[in-house]
Length: 328
Ligand code: UDP
Image (tube, rainbow, N blue to C red; front, side, top):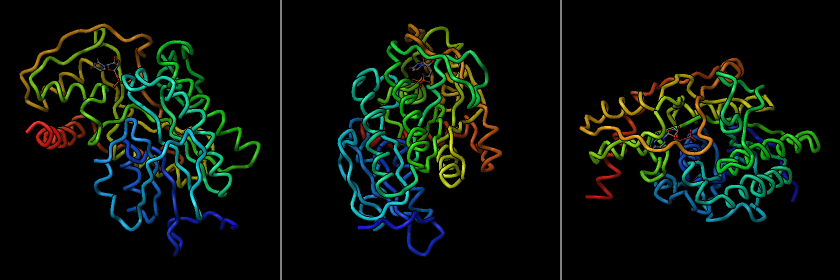
């Protein structure tokens, strides 16, 4: 069968996307947004860290189908495909330290297979990369032309180097085969569907505050992160997908907070009586992180709309339902 050329969401026939990691935090929000924008979505996930509950609003929709599949194996999807979006990977340090080899495989073999699918279908390829490619950055804020400061053999190296390899392979397919590619570098993102036991700081703090347990601040809490609400992140990702720019683009909220400031805000938003407790800093934990989003803004007019406090309030509301359903 000859593949038709890539279509856009504005065409009469709905364009069709394949999303790996569709049952994950970002993959499920992305799939919903693409369907709302007029796409059909084929979701793939091996459910290592993804959850079927994340697909509740999607399963049963005419425009969504799901396959329980591990994309580190050869990927075949029948029919025409216009975009291949590779979002499968453990993304929390706790998860990728527990699954170091699977993390490296999905970033390397998984990216290779998804690129191969895009090439076979003449589809646009979209890679979910990460601010972790900058490692523990010595340049602040981080813009796309910074090469990073990564320890390749430290415990975080499995994620950082897999994503760096994935970026290099993606651009090799572009240069060698003329494949149409996009790369987003995602900075710390939070919101509904971040698993309570995910291990990332926002989910840990919210769950601890809600249970009246002390918030576990690693190190002295002076390290910084810049937190992006999931709705803004997904809007940025779709903006990049629809743009003409080949090459990595930062998508994250540039408002920077120390982890101690985050702890205080979480305690305030939840009205919790929790205190903080200091625990050892994980190896190679970046001391500062803040995206320069000038490129995303100039290319497709993206700026985040939801700031930390509002995002935490909306996430807290979701955790209240989630923990009630689970504990109650
Ligand atoms: N962190 C913390 N307490 C926690 C979890 C994380 O103080 O319970 C810190 C962690 O050391 C890091 C920051 O919060 O400095 C963000 O960690 P996260 O795991 O969310 O993501 P990272 O940005 O490190 O990939």
